[in-house]
Length: 132
Image (spheres, rainbow, N blue to C red):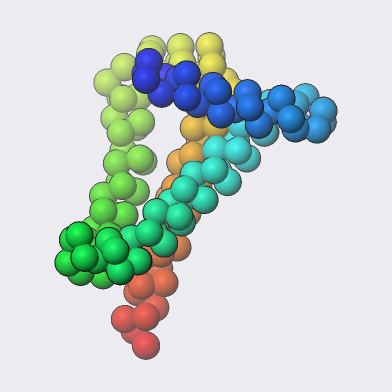
């Protein structure tokens, strides 16, 4: 994990896990996956709410309806494609990360699930609104 992110992610993980029940502490990979999923889903949904506010539309006109869906589509492609591209370019590096940091790999898998679920949910709801 790159230098600027690791201390933040580690601090967040340790802060939650130090206060978690023992059965969750004993299942660190499961817990990291769950925390990554719930945490990123919450962050993305929160950002979507901020984007829907009038304040954001004053800063960037028509941001919520015009720009946010495009950003969500780009984000889904990027968060899926960049790790795959990295695995293609440096397969040994990916193996090393996954074997040296299995808990954080599990957490980042949860981040992928949470972010793509929240963005996909918003995009799906927009498509339903257009059809109706």
